[in-house]
Image (cartoon, rainbow, N blue to C red; front, side, top):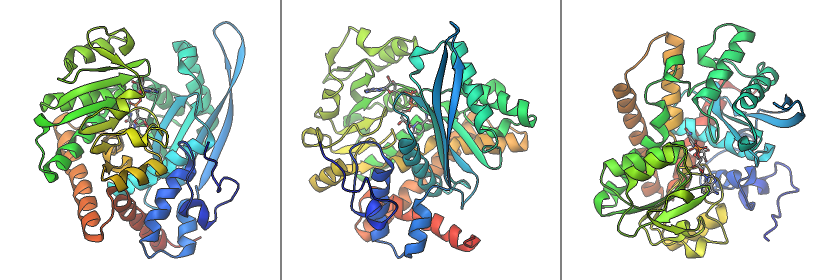
Length: 432
Ligand code: NAD
């Protein structure tokens, strides 16, 4: 196994310049940061300031289970940078969640919000827990206990959480309620809430919709017809299922989809609507018997035009990068391609649309929700979708233009734009 040379080093230049890890890690995100810094004119002091998280909070969360046992969980909130506005970022509930992963995701949020020109910084949080082991009541108590321990660090004008893997509108409703018990009525403390509780129309589908808006722009630039383009999508949760749905509405040829339980493949195209209906009923793909079953490894190396990882991190990595056949990878998930695989695939000519651009739609419509909450006003979904389209196409166009002008890949161009904006705000505010 590859062992990173940098793991024992602190925040020195090497940490984010020449090193990469072997999983979804802060070191990996900083590798891309370092590659962007290499082509920018940024002072050493500012580099260190931009790469280091402002604050990392770890909390112990004791939970009384339904059967009376006490279990203890670890929770995190990392606030990476707030030079451009309040910290903003999702909450992930998964067994693999740890401080390093949360730091990585928090820094991605800093670059993501800057790329979309949202008046936010970046944060992320999570709890190390396998949600399948919890009842609904246990999940609610765990969420409320977590809020009890982090409420002093979050708030409508300081840090605004949102959904991520294994958290949803209901979890956001519990967060809003618990925070409001402690601080008074505060709908704007969290986004991604249910429509009936200060949520925004269009938020639930926003990330998948944004992924598809980016794909439409990409295919236009590449002179390709979406109806003649084949897609494989890994993950059928919030992001994956809406991505599949909107691609299908445009007539795309979706040949493979997967979830945690397995993958299905039909070279001539899958019956997508039927599969989405099956999965939305709470079923797992492995029980869907009407298409050819393949493994979760095989879906990543199918002969398709576009591969869309929309599940977990580091799935395209040094073990499978040589087998990847897609011409385009659109990163709907966060950090699905490791730095080593990114370098290899880029050299091979694969175009990778980076996570900070491809999946920015969620935080864009979260921003709309927050603004509506603060103004006690609500928009119709049509307006949210139109504003999302304008924001995301502008971000894509700027990245593409810079990539062309400076001969950069799309990821490094996106980082250069984002780092430039955060760096400027940092200098303008002053160092104190
Ligand atoms: P989710 O919990 O709704 O869905 C996750 C999906 O991934 C499920 O279908 C699950 O079965 C599948 N999955 C899990 N492990 C898998 C594996 N090993 N192989 C194949 N499939 C697997 O999560 P989500 O909200 O859709 O988030 C997915 C990704 O998108 C994450 O990386 C998240 O950080 C990122 N993201 C989410 C949002 C958002 O608004 N929800 C916004 C930006 C980025």
